[in-house]
Image: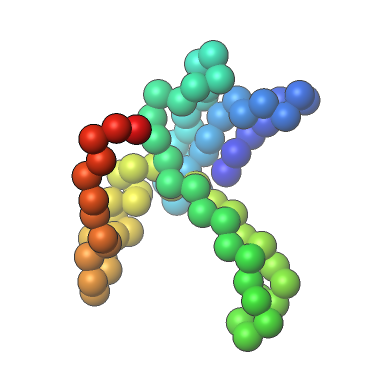
Length: 79
């Protein structure tokens, strides 16, 4: 969940799973989060709805640990 100030600047991200919060310092986050946005289509039970959520790294790790197939992982040399 993202919290913005009146000027629409990001001030905090809250993990939708565990509730941990990370405030921005000078507009930057010191921790990384997975941010998901899904626009559901006509052949779902969520027609025309958009879902958004954020997960901290620990909750992401717990989520993918339960996958039947591991996530594809690739190492990059530059960000």
